[in-house]
Length: 321
Image (cartoon, rainbow, N blue to C red; front, side, top):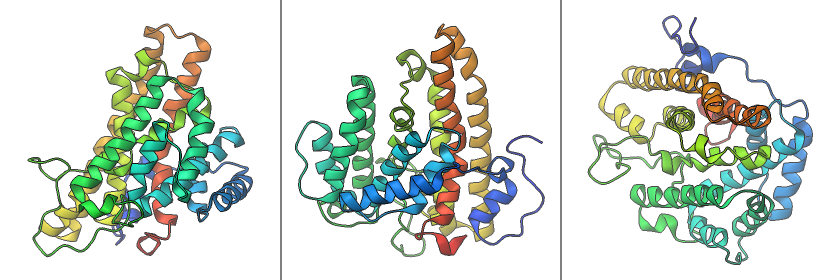
């Protein structure tokens, strides 16, 4: 059986259940870090001290993505994911957050101050190239939301239909907004928040060497992992390109379409991962550096399954599981 082999005829009603039933790679057990209770407690304490509501589901996402990592690495990721889950509810905070990342002082808002603390803890340990990558991801998310939502969506303090939140109802036959002018409606990866994948490195205490992360092989790995997670969210939330498909076809046809896309990207993800050992050897990284790159690559293989679990656990989509 290949990792993306489609099982027998589906019978589950909900898209999340059908994804896990039909795709072997998403149906495999997703272990949780053995100290997840400590991670949840530490992340909850941090959130309350920062003025944010705790998010146990975010901690479990970290515990699945980093199931075999040190507890400190899992806790660091859990804090970032808690912050990101709250940012989804108020994407207007992206503008002041970008100012903080550029060296500005945070305002009184909890999201700004929490980001300032997280950024101060990880950014100094990373290179300027990594910091540019991460802040470019934040800026891209802001621009993607501007394209998808009214300008008020990014007014500071104004909650909006944030990435990951259920889409506002559209009149029948009205297509979803495209991710960029003049293009068909496609999954808006930038609005999804691809900088999540950049956080794997500082949380693990690793920085992927520039020749590796600039390579087509590494880009294929990261993009495939992000696409699978974004497609799963589309299927669960019924938004983006999947939302358009649901308007144009029957529910069953729409589900078949999105599951087929996930299957294709899962196979491409594993193909990209298999190319990483040869890539590290080609760049003569040595044993230690190659092992660190492999740790990051393994996280990218795990994140899609962990993210699907998060979609099923978070209150936003719990009724769809």
